[in-house]
Every structure is written in C-alpha cells, then in structure tokens.
Length: 86
Image (cartoon, rainbow, N blue to C red; front, side):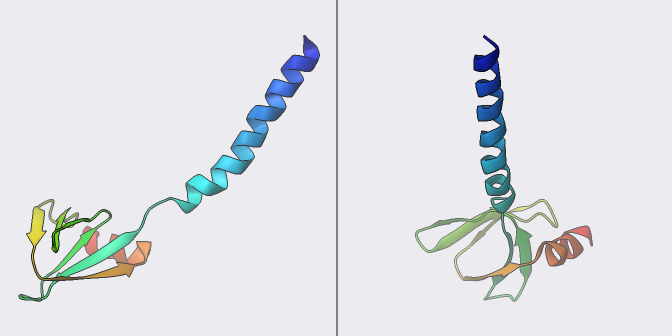
C-alpha cells in the first residue's frame, strides 16, 4: 500500500512540474486594436475575428466593439496595464 501511495504522489508531482510552466506560458496576450478609419485605439486580451471583422471587449472602457477596418498590435503586459488604468 505504501509503495502505491509513493508512486501516486510522484505522479502528481511530475504532472505539476510539467504543467506549471505550460500554464505560465499560456498566460495570454495583450493587444492594442486600432480602428484604421478613426485612429482610435482599444485594448483587449481576446479578439474574435470573423469575416474580416474584429469583435472584442475594450478593457479600458468596458465597451463591446465591432470593427470592419482595424489593425492589431501585440503589446506588453505593462503597456496594456497602463492603457487600461487610465
């Protein structure tokens, strides 16, 4: 019984050692989405692109945004936090 428990603990430990770095790497991305027709910028962590349109929540204002003409730029977490905090 003790051997089985040790084996199970090792398995759980091994899974965590492998999973934690993968989860940390999947922390997500930060985006600045610019409406090319107006020049207005929005900040989000998730963009749904469908049929040439962008749909997302602007985390600076809380508004849901739909754009036909846009440019997406990946930004750092610090740039994102500074923009959303305004």
